[in-house]
Length: 112
Length: 112
Figure 1 (cartoon, helix red, strand yellow):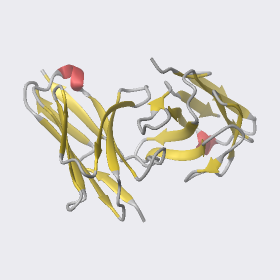
Figure 2 (cartoon, chains in turn brown, yellow; figure 1 turned 90 degrees about the vertical axis):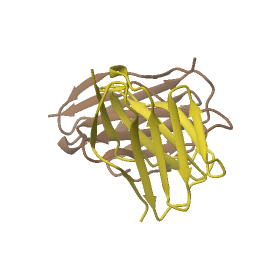
Figure 3 (cartoon, rainbow over the protein chains, first blue to last red; figure 1 turned 180 degrees about the vertical axis):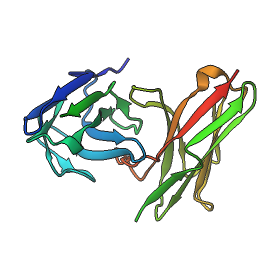
């Protein structure tokens, strides 16, 4: 079975801290995605990557950056966390020649 | 701009009945449409994909239809059970790895 793991289920950080959210998939997928999910707003795409060292902005990239140094790992970085970045963060990957997304369990981030 | 709507934020039905969820889209011409299930505090899980040239797709108690003229997909769960209670998301896509957009979801509650 495909497995997408995220480094933390729950995270509490202070305003201004640099935050790293890690995502790892074990099935050699090329495409990986980062979303945030908020009540009433649904899933919104932050960044995605089609390959190592490649990244593309999604709908809401402001305040975030990403890193993809290895195929299996896609990291989301909050350069200076703010309270409006309190959210559920979901990572996903897509296998070659398919369209279904495999999601990780999510990280619920609270910024105080 | 592209817009995806799901019929209602919440839907309550009695166990054993058929649940019907609606996904409508505007300013969009998807080549396929996916449905996902999401349980509280978890990442979405892929259920079904239907392509634009398919009218209907079935998987066990699930049935999906896709009407490109009406710009609508219907998702049916027959003989519903309390275990089917979850939020269901639709996600239209235009090409491989390009299904970034999700509907807001419908929270289904199946009452015993």
